[in-house]
Image (cartoon, rainbow, N blue to C red; front, top):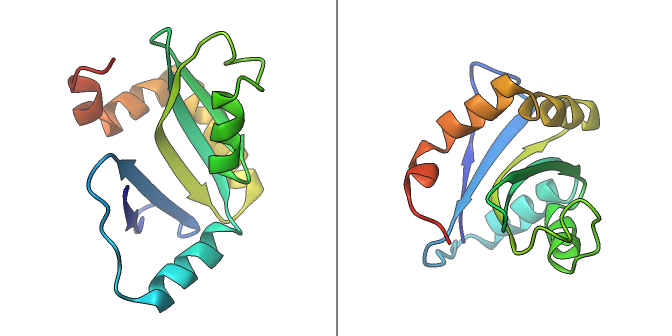
Length: 129
């Protein structure tokens, strides 16, 4: 997984956007960077979007996005257990819980869904099974 951090100069300085896409693993030679990144990520709040087996999306919030994804994949979440398989297609990390919850609410609106499709237009233009 290739993870790229994007600073958001025009928006909230507390927001760190992390885009993941399937690609060969690129390892950082700086253990200080990876340790620092791991420490930062352990104190973040996440908004995530899943592509479900029925072709629809599920938007959620979590303090541990990867543990939450595992719960979705293990059919432990009522909202997605009948919509398998699920695939993580997007997540954002926030320093403050209230910011993450506000973003989750926005992404569930019509305007938020349009914004997500615009942000991920390359992903949505590809065929996915």
